Length: 358
Image 1 (cartoon, rainbow, N blue to C red):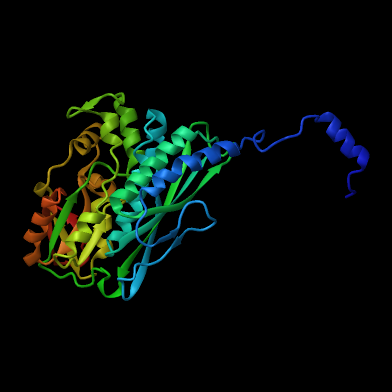
Image 2: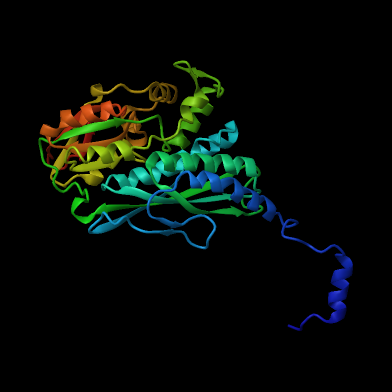
């Protein structure tokens, strides 16, 4: 193939007299710079011991706290899922950032890890600085609640990749745990007690079904559930369990934990159970929040499906010995974290599911 001649180039320039810029292609670098300036004070509020260099560099630097003798790093990554569709529709952007942080820090917590730092990824077709800053404000709030530093991230403006007014979120958390204190679930035995820590709502799971049920019901976002609008109830951010549970670890021995995300109660608890045991949960031991009552009624969703899709009011499960159960529940309730004894560990019958709700 021949190279273009000067005449070819001159002809091209003649036909396109105005030179193109990145902004002409749909990427507003000035808006990106403005967002970074908006983010910096938000990130600064999350700083903690160990941060050597945060937002602004090519890479963020973090030093593992020296109090750990044999530190093991624990990492987790996640998104917010189709809950974002409702954020776009209802123009609620201040809570999904906390959802993003919660999904990762709660995941690494179940192995006993203290959250150290968090990175986020925000992608959109056209950058709206106000919306993006609101989202990152929620991320910073989540990091403050979890006690981890927001030390970096990426904002990607990609014209034609996303519809106007929409964006995607992903996050990445890193924590640390002493090697000798990693929680694996291996020591769980029949007779141990299952404690449930209350969720704040549907968290960030099952929203494809939630959206389908809302559509079928025909109600508006202002529809009231127990004195609150449906929008407020559905968009309540995910509970972050990090600080009260890390404090609980100083008081009792926790044998296993499960973050109740996609898969609900019946598919997440087995992830921490030895093969020979079964968790038996008693449905009457905690009140089913109004949101889940409404979803089950309006969607005609069977109990088994509810337990497989949603957290049904229990966002984190803690398993410990019977002698520590009452102390743990009292401690968590004193910290403002509603907790209940919801079941027990038994010998697993041949061929039975590892978690059942009765």
